[in-house]
Image (cartoon, rainbow, N blue to C red; front, side, top):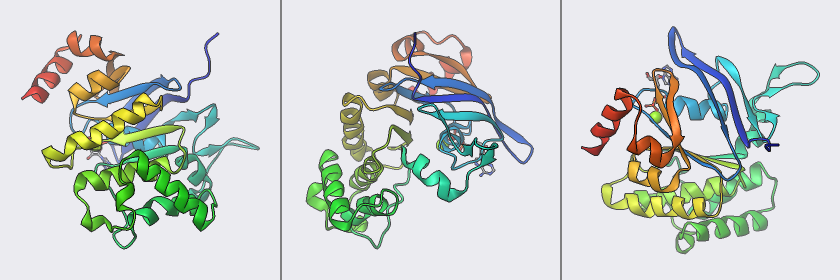
Length: 255
Ligand SMILES: Nc1ncnc2c1ncn2[C@@H]1O[C@H](COP(=O)(O)OP(=O)(O)O)[C@@H](O)[C@H]1O
Ligand SMILES: [Mg+2]
């Protein structure tokens, strides 16, 4: 008997106006599994992540997190959830964006604590303690009182990761977390993500950092033409691409 996957994506389609971006995506992610989602620019990687946590409403298809339907309450009849109903589900999928999206007027501690108060209903003291613990995990505890503008891009992204962790997510979604960083700041962020991976966290990570994907991901999905056109264990996929499309994509990244 196999256990229920932590995340199941079934028949996911997404169109913008008449443009079909995702044309039927199906995959499962087991608890503790790390998946790297790769693919050309514009292939729909961000759209896929955003449909998983219903930041975008899928055109068709179903998402299940830990067996529960995401974005749709099923009893008594199927009905789209409001943003308010969605908030606790979204919190279970800690998302880290390319552009850190920290609140400029709030301290680092506040940036991390605020969702814990609003969504989890923690007291200020509890939320601050949680924030400080999560900031320690990303090695940013010494900057609790700083404002985002006083931090480097790499530090800001680590705070954004702490903010996602403070929601106690079941799944982490990373959307090109190092693409907006100066090259010398990439390593510190990848190293934090690596540490989280080593803790056994479940991750769906969009990245162009192929060496990192090879090292950290259990499986790689290649999104191309609106579908996952190749997938498999990271080393196999990267060493032996089946299609010319993936071969030329990897060759371009190498340059
Ligand atoms: N909100 C939107 N409205 C219209 N088109 C969109 C929207 N979001 C994404 N797209 C389009 O969908 C395609 C896929 O975008 P995206 O998911 O951002 O790709 P990727 O992350 O792989 O670069 C692009 O052509 C993009 O212009
Ligand atoms: Mg994108």
